[in-house]
Length: 143
Image 1 (cartoon, helix red, strand yellow):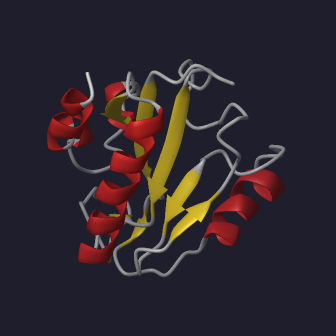
Image 2 (image 1 turned 30 degrees about the vertical axis):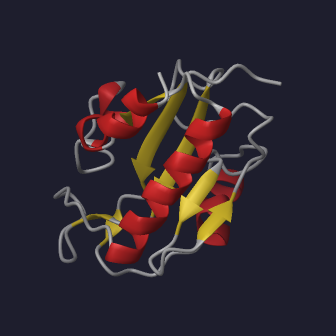
Image 3 (image 1 turned 120 degrees about the vertical axis):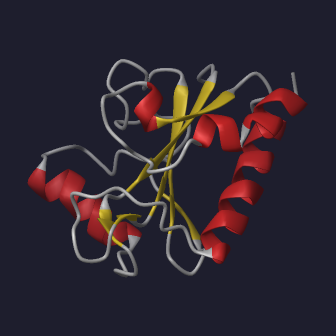
């Protein structure tokens, strides 16, 4: 089993309200980038549905230099509705609830893991909010 010490949150960088499902994202990764599978381990769709992507037992492809020991979670959204160049926290209430639920579940199995946003490792706005700060209480709870 992989040693997991990071849980990294991403956004799909799609416009607010655009309904993108996990299979669409998988297509972007597999068909357009030539990867073996979707890069994320989980995707949270607009309605809050938590969809499994790449198995957690397999290294993801979501954060350069940090995939070996991390789990990648992506929520659908992350940009202004009319301009995808403008980052925006577009999480629906259902997505927020599901993300919190998933993080709590993952911390039970990976209690040493710290929660980060992709922006903590790359010069990007992703996930369009400060995930490290917002979920610090979950990161700290199981230490």
